[in-house]
Image 1 (cartoon, rainbow, N blue to C red):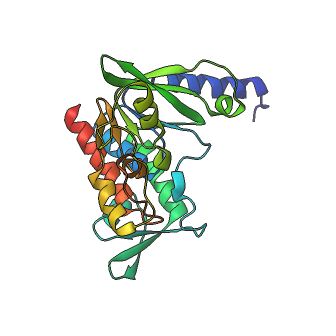
Image 2 (cartoon, rainbow, N blue to C red):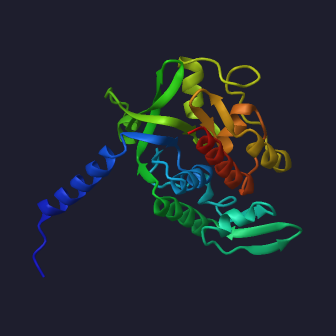
Image 3 (cartoon, one colour):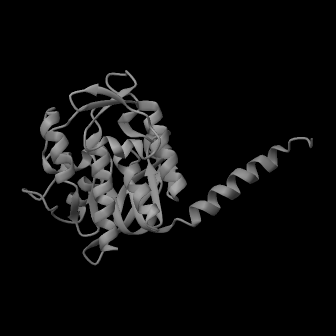
Length: 257
């Protein structure tokens, strides 16, 4: 076995990363946030042949699903949505009365691997800090290193072009807040992010799918971001609506593209 060359290790990492990154400076769909809804959307869109890039601020994609409920690594799904987690190879247990449980860590792992296997590319430790706004339409995202953002250095970002952009940043609806401030009114009751309401899973699970839509030309919302933008309740560690929301936004964008 050859001796390990430290410089060759570095070259291998840098060369592969920038080769893959340069292939995704212009994509069909850019997704801000790699939580469960975003991952489902990425898989479906990639399966339909679209070039998809996801940008996740944190080191680990998966959003809030990792911790299940209060750190117990179990999530709940309801009838009508459980097939979405089964599709990626997650076994579920019937908890009775139409409720099903799944291992949260396995669920996130399978959602990530299925999106990647379908052809989507996840770039972690990258923050979407702005949008590319041209001719009254969102045409991509402006990104920077999460480390640069955290330290607060004044370093200019770079831009990724996209035919469609998805805000999947969860409760904070970060991309939509940038758009309402810099580009114009959102398609909501008051033209802005209305903010999520307190927990009410029964309503939140229904509205997260209903609220999944295009809220500004070129910008769609999915997952908890959809409820935050539209002023609907949060739903806690039940994730069926999140998965169905990801599928719906993929279908909407696919039909437009």
